[in-house]
Image (cartoon, rainbow, N blue to C red; front, side, top):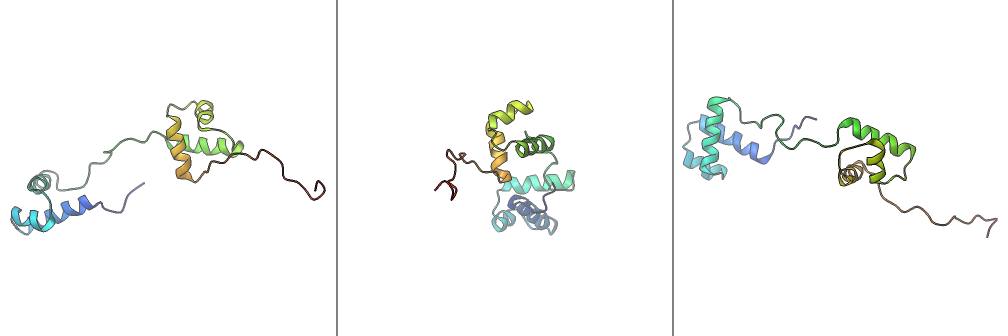
Length: 126
């Protein structure tokens, strides 16, 4: 997935860079953009060395559930929707926690419900 929205921090860094290129002093930049002097200094260094202020690709915590795991979970729930997160983890031999699976199911729109304990009465039974 490619994120098209820029974070507030990235917008501030880009504004710092544009002001630096327009020869605005660091002191005025810190007041106008409301960032620290060190942020302006780091933005200047990054522009001189890398020519970009964007985040490094791949930075951040890696995902625990891979796409193949998610597809396998969905396939398993399609066949048996009454499985618990622990059952899913054991059947698919996943190394992630049950909490991780639970959060994925909530994110995907699955809901928890207790199964009905008694049957509905038909008109004939009534």
